[in-house]
Image 1 (cartoon, rainbow, N blue to C red):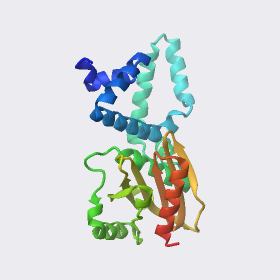
Image 2: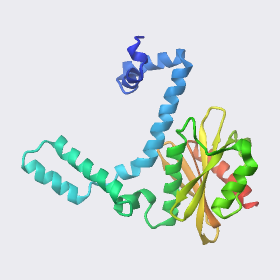
Image 3: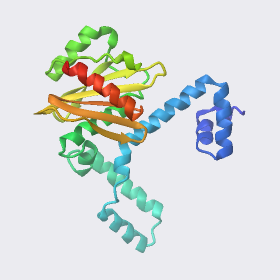
Image 4: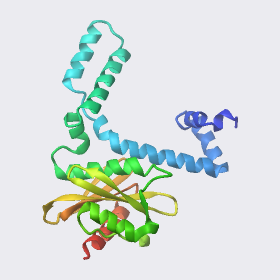
Length: 255
């Protein structure tokens, strides 16, 4: 293997190349544990990004943008130039119109169920890829962590013990949510696979049934219980994630 093949650029070229390139990469990873871990991390990041942005990417191009494309094509402009202009407009909308349609799609709109799920998937995508600062307060400070998160949430929160599922608590952090401060607890297993429990103020309704969503390899279960909405998100099988979610629910509710 050449030195250029082992650079990040070379690895990316092989990873997205033809069958021969991918076969060469398999051989390289068999000889290099560090490279194998890097590729696994890139896969996790790709899955997290797809979970965050794919629902928007699948939406139909708005009619007003299609009209812009049609007018530009009639004037003989290059398609690449047209799409560059549209991308710039979309970027400005995303920055300046946080209360508008773009923001509504990313937060799930007015539906509280979709808002909770979207927020949990975004938190997973944002923080599970962090290597150095995935949490604000580590699990080694559990009494302080419990008090701090409970005070910010305004509800006494239990930090579920998921060790029987192979996951250890790493720690937690406070995040902004549409309904007030939310809590993110992060767990990790022996393979450094990460799992999150997202807890946010609920709509004050009765206990709800478990609900499920999937974004590529990332799956989630969420539910409401009185004043709290909870979601468990991870790149696990549906059955395994369901078992973990049921255990977390039982510990949080004391049932």
